[in-house]
Length: 448
Image (cartoon, rainbow, N blue to C red; front, side, top):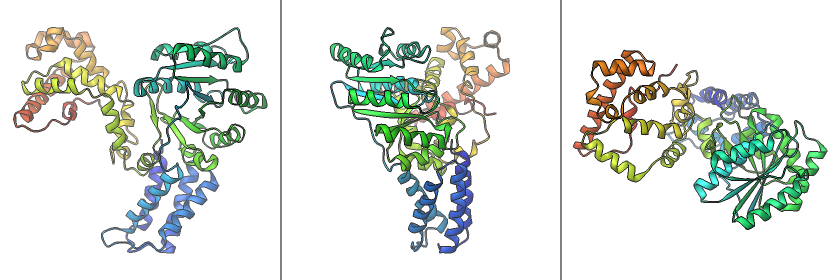
């Protein structure tokens, strides 16, 4: 996402390259190009116009220090205005109430059911909550079953009543159930339609009035661009919802919805969905998104994702093994699993400053670790724990068992041996081990 916009904005800033100062003429030329880039990204026309006018107002008359170039100053101003356009700061969900009631709204296909599961999973694993999912979509075939499957995946209870066709009755009964069973959050998955209609709006409005939820969220598919913004306005006019959830942000979308929706409905974007897995949900941070749009990466989010998979006790044990040169393939496999849990590989790589642009036309397959895993899993427990015993005949057997060439097996073993020596040497020299990035050197998935 945002790759084309990032590229266009970078070209726009080059107009100022070589200029000694910011003037009304060169700013106008730059911002004309910026406005075109925003419109091409499907940003609302009024939003794009207002945005460039605000940037121009901030830029004209700015004193450029000798150590800062006009181009750099313009990037800073655009960055700050982009962050402000998307809300300025992150806004969390309101979890007051006993239980807290969170009502979902949106069109069919926007991802409400999947997001309901992701939110329940996030609140359970990161906030220590005991959520209850409620199936109130009484129209779509298999909608109730889908929510039950989602709940089963994350270990969260699902309330449903297939004999009842009134979603308000179902929702009220679910809240009573939550009070009896000690669920502190109730997440209500509602029905959607293929387009906004009066029956749907009456139903969701009735649900909100009867339940008086602590939080009403509008879930929208970010790939629908300006249609997403228009639909958000219609829902907000009737519901006065509390926040927006953008799903499918990892898809091939131009980003217009993310940049326009906040200014049109004046409601914060609270969460973004970045994949199909139940943990592929992020809190929305406007400043971090502005960083990524301008090709600055997002190191803070990358570090946070790494910390989620970090176990201090395990890290200490691993450090001792490395110091004694006992790091083995079981440890290696464990590190691969931790990296995979962090999310989409290309998305992770794009969080590193400068890497996103370099990877624009590069395909990083999320299954790229499979070859390495197949080789390791074709080893016996003894071989994984003692790589030094892997002689020629054992390597031949591993190659056949994993479906790889013997050359691939030899390559992995050599890289593993070299890395183990390097890590052991670092420890003996009393260097601080701050991570295992060196482990992946040469053994990282190949980019196509």
